[in-house]
Image 1: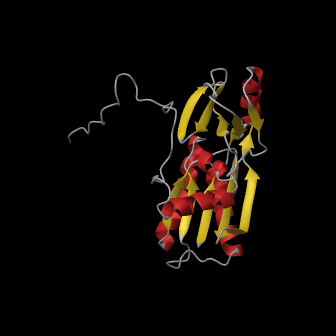
Image 2 (image 1 turned 90 degrees about the vertical axis):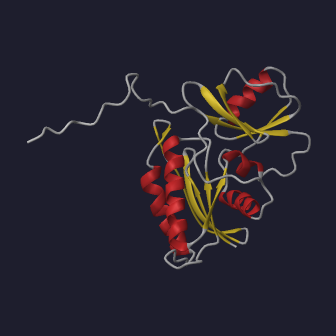
Image 3 (image 1 turned 90 degrees about the horizontal axis):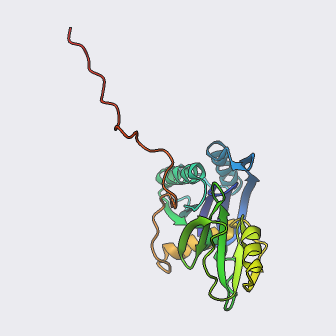
Length: 230
């Protein structure tokens, strides 16, 4: 199975081609300015073009790809939209199914043998908050308001060190992993499982945890201009 992986939900951006579970072409780079994700919408299409060319895949040909796996969040609003817009556009071009994968699902695929430990995937949000994905649920909460661990925990994600330190400080049994961003192979594996029906469906649309900061004005939108009669 040929899968194009697109990921720009977090600070890093990645494009890769995975064939039968093996990465045959990949590009990955940091995309931050002052700690904030930047430039995903312009850099990711070029990265996708390069990995497709390296893998010898022509997306103008119907059936060139079987799947396009896109991360849907949680993460950067702009990065998620850029990833999904590119994925859906390429999917239309070559007739490939576009499958959504959460950041936590992809990272959990890297840890199939945690035993009794529950994996927590932590991503920094805004104003001292984090996104916490665990057990198929995503929470947005203050970093000093973590929920009870209810057993041994393993922590991954960009904010893993911060969360692990807080858990350890309150005496929880915590294992800090070295996984900070999802790997393209694991994004592809989750997408393939979802496509085969082994995982619950998930539309390839943005997974927004926090409400948008932009809101309509309190007085409503302005009425359309009135055209003066001649």
